[in-house]
Length: 517
Image 1 (cartoon, helix red, strand yellow):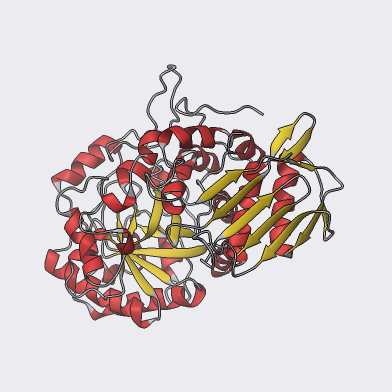
Image 2 (tube, helix red, strand yellow; image 1 turned 180 degrees about the vertical axis):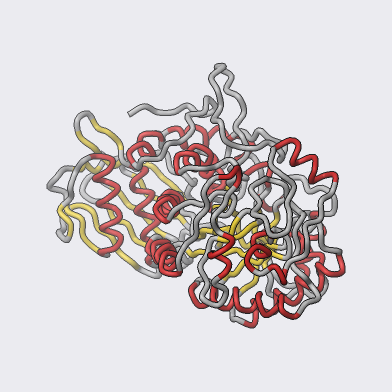
């Protein structure tokens, strides 16, 4: 009997020899109310069946901290066990998150059985490889409303991802309301790339996003990028920002992608990077930093605040090191763990709790490995986001069939990026000298220079976000027969009907043998 298709691949899965569990409108669903509501919603969307919630006689949902004892997954946070036979389905989580993830897996196990639906006899013991499993959504280059963000949370959580990194600020706009600095949204939020409309989240809307994520066992990691990517700050508080510095490289980007050269006090809607900087030697800058992150910390229950630190091309190395050291300490003093892009690892005074986020290639170039490794040497860890694998905004290759690839996307990260390339890398092999213990987790960023709508997000993220999820959750490459490209493409292809029922407009790339309903 073949194994059912599950993505990300579980730690252990064994097919049973008995008959499947058959679903009907008489099937009972009992146990944890939150998990039951989530499962009932999945089953209704996939099958049209409304189960008898709160009653026995079918599916039981439990929380037991000893779940998986003796399997290597027992007692681990977010772990779960599924046992299916002809008479019952029992999902047991070590905690509420584990039970939620077991529910997501059961949704993938649903099989059409003639005119009915069933769940194959199977036993699954599962737990995540990495603690941090994320996606990033850039809402600065193009603003995306609350309903789009919550929709992305649903999609990410279905793949057992547990962090949403929101890139809230950039040269093109400031997207979060702060009482301490009201001019940021009053003067710097109205524009986006290409002259599109901007926008921002009120504090209540941000809290709504945070609460919605928590209901799906996700944290929100807010990013305010600095000292570069700060042209929008200068629109609101010009006394804090240096004048734009225009290099030949930036002129090349402007030539290739359009837009005007940035000017002081004028909103920027192009795609060039590296021209802006805050005033590193002005104490008013650090008052601003303290105001911004202090207010964000009060609204963000998760442990992380991201302060950017990438592509600060207009800031000298000495000034950059000074700035990073001071800002990381401000964040740490708020009781939060600072996160920064890997360039900040070169700063000798950076707070020793800082997490580095590596955005270089699968094979590091130009000193990137050394900067990333410095976080680990300093006592921190890394989040891996290799741009030439899991930057979800990179274009897809043109299909071999001759049909057109999706229109959005860029190609600078060795693109276009196939699903196979998004899958075929091993986290512990990326940064020399950094083994699994130095890796906090994996995150798949989606930058939005060309991403305008929720439909754009779907088509660019799926199915490649599933490849990132498997790198984050599943056993290491080679540690399981399922952790191969050949297995993944078959398993993810079987999710087509489920994704369609969830309303996910995925890219039907011809790399994947998609299963029809």
